[in-house]
Image 1 (tube, rainbow, N blue to C red):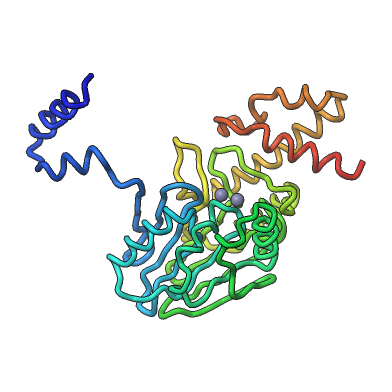
Image 2: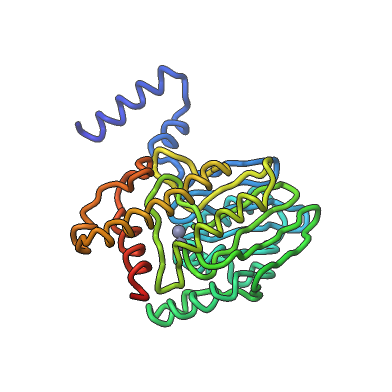
Length: 299
Ligand SMILES: [Zn+2]
Ligand SMILES: [Zn+2]
């Protein structure tokens, strides 16, 4: 169909719904991002890369993770439309590029950037290797096991429960709102990235998730970095437990295959993880490879 005819047809359809030309133009070129408020002041921004959590706090704007430089610019523009306050605090859940590449968009406009100490080390090492140190904006503060700061009526607490997706994943709790950003510690029904060079450990990751479930109360809302397209990044304790169970099933499956004398190539032919068939889509080679390496590391 010719573009002109296509637009005419669309216009006819929308015209029937009594929409203005402006709405038609907007419908043809929608915003590349989505913003969803979780309460009056706290919301999530999704475009490309890991989910961003933000709060329009009376003492200043709080942002968790930054995706990429171009998408962070969209976020900043939107938040500036919603609040006249300055950016008070930026948190990175971990060092991966789809969570920290947008930090640079906050250069000179944010007071404090905080991350786990291993996240900063990993971010610096990765930037050095990728020769893009000039495109980084690093944490101004790091922590080891816990970090807390009161901003207005909100209290932001970061927890570190040990190695999981990397060796520097912070769990970010907005205590008053009772919202937790899990970063990439949960991939909702999607095969996860498991960054072994970045210190990941599947066995310990399971422990981290079990500790998460017992640390927060039943009213806590959770969000995570990534999900399968048929699912959402808004998750529950049940989803966190299901992901812990998935990781257990990955280890059990690969371990049994190794014990049965299967070759690496044969193991990697698997198309699903027995017991966790809900995890569909591409990328199954990532957990299989990581589990194989983790299980054979000391033999
Ligand atoms: Zn990510
Ligand atoms: Zn990640």
